[in-house]
Amino acid sequence: MNGVIRKTLVLLSSTLFLLTAACTTIKPIYADEHATLAEKIQVGDRVRLTYIDDRVKVIDVTKVSETEISGTLHKATLSQRRGAPVVADWRDVYAAERVRISVLKTAGAAVGIVAAIPFLAIGVMVAGAGAY
Figure 1 (tube, one colour):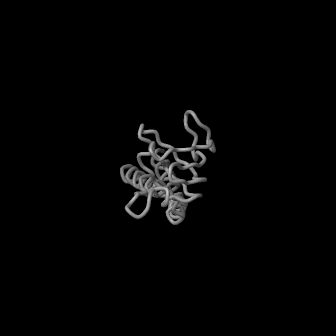
Figure 2 (cartoon, one colour; figure 1 turned 30 degrees about the vertical axis):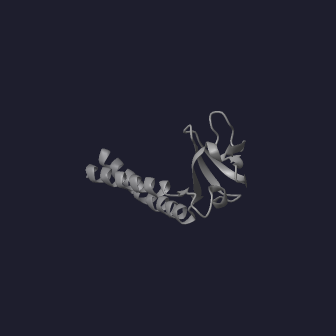
Figure 3 (spheres, rainbow, N blue to C red; figure 1 turned 90 degrees about the vertical axis):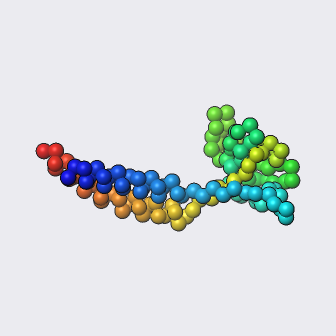
């Protein structure tokens, strides 16, 4: 019986992890023959910039031009606080990815967590009853 409970708890925790990890979608932004990166990014987008020297910054875009992208830092780094202004020259950027929060996936994760609570409670009670 103890092995069944352990397997159930591992399955539930793995499922919860996958549900919560799937809340954010990151899609690469590619320049093509018809549009540059600057034309594909709009003010208000959250963008993850990977620099040539492998630094990565996630910014909330406030201005886009043909030569640079400006915004505020979304997450604090070792050297900068959250909300700090960021100006990146396109020549220093290796890759750009748009970060979007998926409302449906987030709602699914919340429902999954709420639905898992009774199962976890039953598992703890059964495991506790078997210990005596």
